[in-house]
Picture 1 (cartoon, one colour):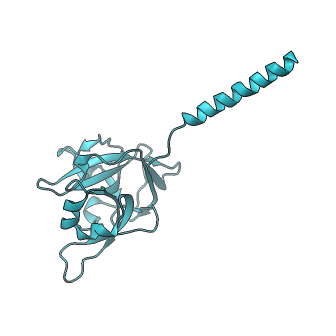
Picture 2 (cartoon, rainbow, N blue to C red; picture 1 turned 180 degrees about the vertical axis):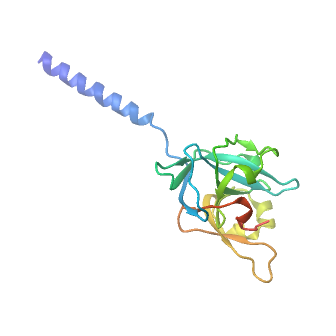
Length: 199
């Protein structure tokens, strides 16, 4: 009987430890985006290459804000970026809209925050997403929606947006929700990258 009680206690201890481990597991990210590289020039991705999401802010003084760092797969043919938190307010347009561009650098490390003017994209970027972007919409996006009406196409939170060329009656391109969470990154010289002209 004593051995039986000891066995029961051991089973209960293992069960409790297993339960605690599950409770302390890393929570799933809020949003994950991934994709492959479209090589438009003959080059290779170096081992120390970095992947970032750079958020474009066009509100008074335009600037770029780094938020989100990704990882490359083993053969340097694709990437993944996960977001555990929503973008900082300084990465948003009119407190309602975030437009994040996935970029690959030559190994240059970009600190989170406003990009230093001393960093020249011609020198450090190996490529960037030109046809799609990460779109983030806040719950209270009235100001942003009044300036960018296409934002009504998106639900709150993170989403991938695909660029829609401007019509004859429009000045700027817009974005429409994508059906998946993949973004292709074009590997090319910076001067040859043609981005969605949304602002």
